[in-house]
Amino acid sequence: MGLGDLDELVLSCRNEEGRQYIAEAVACYKAGAYRACIVSAWIAVVYDLLAKVRELALSGDQAAQLIVDDLSKWQPGISRGDQSAIKSSLDLERTIANVANDQFGFFEGMQLVDLERLHADRNRCAHPTYRGTEQPYAPSAELARTHLVHAVRHVLSQAPVQGKAAAAQIIRLVESSFFPTEVEKAKVQFRSAGLDRARESLIRAIVDQLVFGYLEGMPPLKGRPQTACAVRAIAEMYPEICEPRIRRAQFDMSARG
Image (cartoon, rainbow, N blue to C red; front, side, top):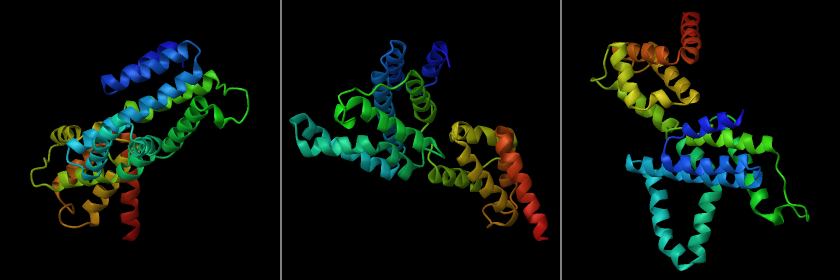
């Protein structure tokens, strides 16, 4: 990945504030300041994850609202230099990737591991006592670039689409009597619900629920034309993900007789 590719990566960030933070990290990378690059990349990740939590709180998510309330509660204490409030805020920063994954299902597979590695390397870069030697930590250009890519692809370019909660939202949408029976209209509904920005794991979960729900589930899904339309719409949006799973479901049903 060249320097021009990194500039394009910055442009893929969802919001302007996150783009400014990661652009600072890219500037550090271009200057050869790899420690500063990694520290700035982690700051961008923390900022963006907290922004996503605030978005979810505005949409009515209670777990996200609790986190936002805590942040608001700590701010006056932080301004006064209250060590307890500062510690609570720093603890949230330290664990934000795990919180985002455990409570909201933001990540899949190795993505959380990549972010944990970024955090660990950020600590090595920012805290000299981590090394236990007189030599400063010297990350390579390749490592700094890898962290930049992971920060943007896993976090800053992604919408705050939750895992189980997002799947449940889509299923409720399909179960509605107002869900269309025309594929193109169904796609419009799904895009409005954020499914065009969903992670692969979310698409797999939704398709599995819809297919098996249509074939042998309960009345809100079973045998309904809306369910069949939803499956076709998602299959056209994500053919490489959906088609193998649909064929497998059909095979399983035929094998059962």
